[in-house]
Image (cartoon, rainbow, N blue to C red; front, side, top):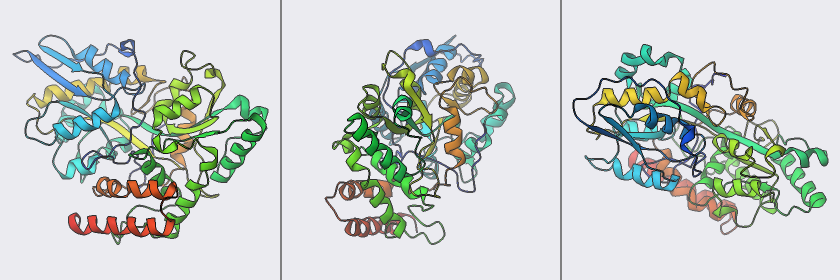
Length: 438
């Protein structure tokens, strides 16, 4: 299914560093190199030995592309290297490699959320001319135009889209069927389902959500705000929206889920949420779709055949999906010393038709018209995307997110009142906008 994106592109993954606006879209897991597929990577052989260093975190959805890049493009005088790394490590290394004139990496995995920030700071190489030059050879016209748009800023393309990841709900169909529960379409229905599972199944914490205080809770807050049609910053007035009724309702609804989640929820990233589902201590969870295929593997959990997938609920009845969409892609850092044509051919090979087909069902590739019937979650992802509000694409989001993250955690956990938290968030955002974005 091609992704349809409104005027302001749908994106996900909130910032956890000033320069890197990410939230770990499926980050952390490891997969074996058998995910590599041999594809054509017919670059012009450079005259001297050349090493291409790739920075990308390990996950079931990313590894097929990275492993294919390494396997297919290491030949003749070229060696493509990718060392295993988790998501926090990637964030740190991305920041470091873009902070000086001499970086350590030649290809970076990037996300639609960071493109405005990186593009405005000229940290990435514009790819438009290279895209046009190699489009026919690698059939790049088959990449979803909306995903291409999300990897662009102010008319320049800074990333070659690889795949999309969107929030999807995973749930225990066996327990839902046993207790007459259907996938919830609102937070109220999710609370009702959770209470029923507590009473009927003795399950203390039926809901598992990634609300890690240093990143994921910001994604959740923004998704809940977006479900009500509200941005962090009003696009017309450039005024923050943290003192609006929608912002207050977001806190109210997030706090309403606490009785059904582990008390340590603000320490849970997506891998920990996954583990709750693996071991049966939770019956429903909302994560990025790159996490979903792991739930269906019998080597990970005895409940593999019991999971089903649905779009996330709306925060309120009549609202849009509580979710976010991130487009992942490949970018070339401004400070690489490797030939740009060579690097582009390597990343183009990694998103080729054969590479994209081989990524299914682990990934939701960026190419149009691929058969995703083998993916157990693709239908849920399609429905989630179709019912998602448009979201912000602005360079001020990473610094604002950094500033409000601790405040969101304090309000959600009850350490700060909703009213005081809103005022502090509004003041922090206004200060950033006045200093850097007037």
